[in-house]
Length: 254
Image (cartoon, rainbow, N blue to C red):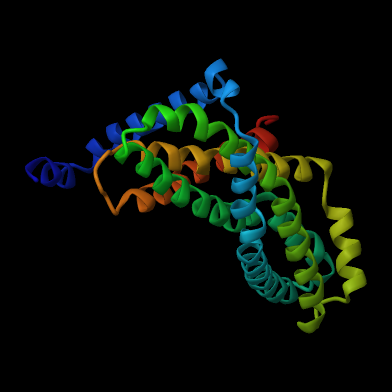
């Protein structure tokens, strides 16, 4: 209790715990691709993980993509009207969804869901004294499932968000759906699509999954804060890794 109070009074000390958690996540990641883990790969575990990460998450992705897209459309369209630049609304909204809004909202929300469940399962393995089994047989099939499901979910979320914006813009008397689509086509570059896919298909699922693994294996005692710790780590690391990818994709040339 005294140590907890001391940590609360000196916030920078928490950084050391975060670094330790990051180191644990890296060790789990490396261990997942060691020969024993590859040999113990279970296709059945992979299919079960794909089910709850994929089809059972479609409602979350749909609702999140629609809500975020409508909010972004309202804000952008109203401001563009003020400057009589509503003709470029399609480009502004589409670029916003591709570059930052989509990865930082819909994608990280799904990754947080994955992190919370993985943390709970990792904790259960630890409490049962099966930490070695967790690292050897659980991590790899579930991680590959996360990467696999990120592909259709990322594509689906983008399509839903884009269609929602294209249909919502005319309701605000900004532009027709045809004008919106034409503007979006002119504004989107291949680099935007590449950055979007790197974030949603590779970076964010990896961050969320191993944040859950690290948080869940950090304790062998019943700790109700484990899933919330996993979600916190997912958002913190996710924000900074997305920033790094943005810098590498758009600012590095400068």
